[in-house]
Length: 505
Image (tube, rainbow, N blue to C red; front, side, top):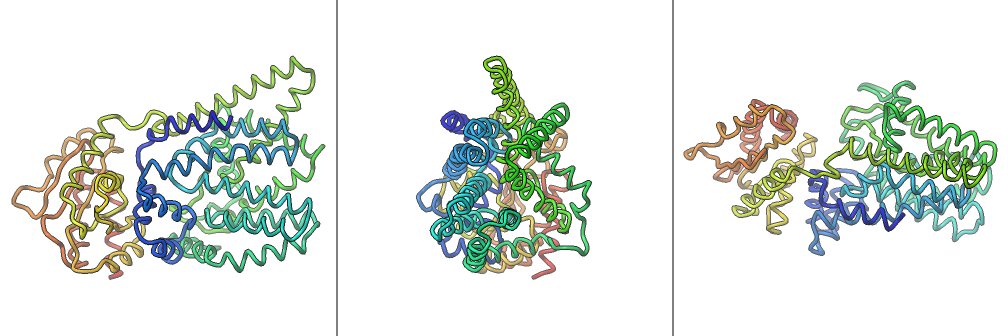
């Protein structure tokens, strides 16, 4: 199964079009390791270990494909760990079936390709659970130290790792065994992991996330239940017709576990209860609202719940019930793959060939006229293509989603500023008339701009340096207003960010 998953992910590794979050990791990784850690811990927040991998990839000469290989490796390595977890909690057969069920889910397939931190988060969370059980079963300082190291790696992988730590702590308290050793380990983790806590605080402050107070909540029990329902679909075969059968199967699994392995039900209850409580208490804006990927650490446990009744069925009256169980498993896996394709068709089908070629051509045009002082707005995949063709391509990139961080980054660029570069991406614009009007707004030869149209991409560059920060922001606002008028991509979001950033300078 592990080899098959590696083959599937490798086959589709380059199909998914480049994303701005992948460009972000690689552009941040272009600095020194100290600069990368300083950026993540004190400016952006986030996952230091993921950005450290990106830094290593960049400085070893790699690019987008290498970044995705990291995601592939950790996704593939998670599969045997899921089997080990199922064996530890129930039995070997349940572990194997749980691993098979997890392997076909959108959550694992997508994040096994997408060059972000989520397969790394899944892998490190599995390590932390396996290390915890080893410590609780056998005791000893060495075992608890290994658990502490695994927890630190998990905390460095994603801010939501704090939910896993809390769930493990609650499980230890409920279990009432080796509480003292576990408490000492968590206290040490709390001290050694201080940089990771700080990175979480920085990220929370960027997105205005707090407890109580103003702002919309995920909040009510109803909304949290709906969120968990949505997560269960991404952890299995999707929604609609599949939802009730899958959830009933998981409920049967929970009942069977309660009759035979009550400790496992307690553990799964902790894994579910902690996020539920956190999401009911935390105030989240729409930008920070959690998605299925944020609970990827719960995927192995949901797969175990689904696997238990299928394994029990297979053992009732073999070979007849064994065949029925196998058919059920394969049907569920087929449904999972179908949902993965329905949810993210580009994961398998890729971009239209013309769009991929247009992105590469736009990157080539920018790379050909590159100046190291150019100032780029947003971590556009077109810039990533330009950098892959010319490693000296400008690294002065301004984040487009956070006004405070945009203003801070702009202040850090040594003046005078170089030329401005902007990409307006109409690939998500369904109105073809709007796309066809793009050439009509291209800068005229006598203006202060030059521009090109490559498929859905409108690329604009100022002919001369913009020199001052105020001038850069004003010109950028004018360019984004063109995008807003055409209804192109995220021009409206970019414009709001620029206006708010201007008030901070």
